[in-house]
Length: 244
View 1: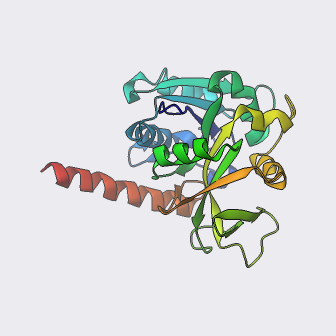
View 2: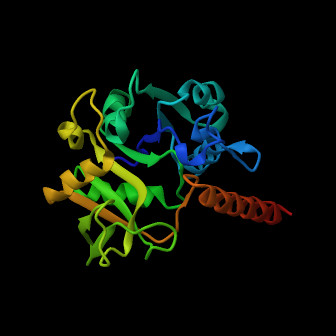
């Protein structure tokens, strides 16, 4: 079992319609959060967790993200890009297109999520599971978004983003881990959603899970954006005070 950190695929290809007019001229990854593009905060968090390589799955105005990040050297990372092309491929379709850059096993996170969890522990749990895919879950109880996972005795019983039930007290935290073999079910060059892939692997009884205890932050909505700004401002202030 290798201790080398998996690369991370960041899904940054969406149209971000919920954040308009902020995203009429820029992609969501470049929305300002306390004076910096959101993706800059993501990359620093990943580097602090030992990540060395990132692949940005880009679509809408993705060239603007590439212009900002370059090769990632200023973040202490190696950053590469995979572009959807003439049409959006969906979340799983975008990862499928990026597989040649990602290697055998890798993390996946959404381009609007800030996930302050222990990535090393998640990776170890995935490696020990022997499964082709792992979903991290968080006991959300519909506090910060609508829960979509029924999680019982350490395993996922049901996952559905559309047909939710009262038994769903957990939520897909937003950090997945995959082996390439999991994407054999995804059609090439066709739109395909990551949620559908999770459900497919779950139906085969092969979806591993890891319960995260740190809450997630996101900029997918204006409310989430303001909450993330407040959280990151508090974190920055705490770092300053610890130095003094």
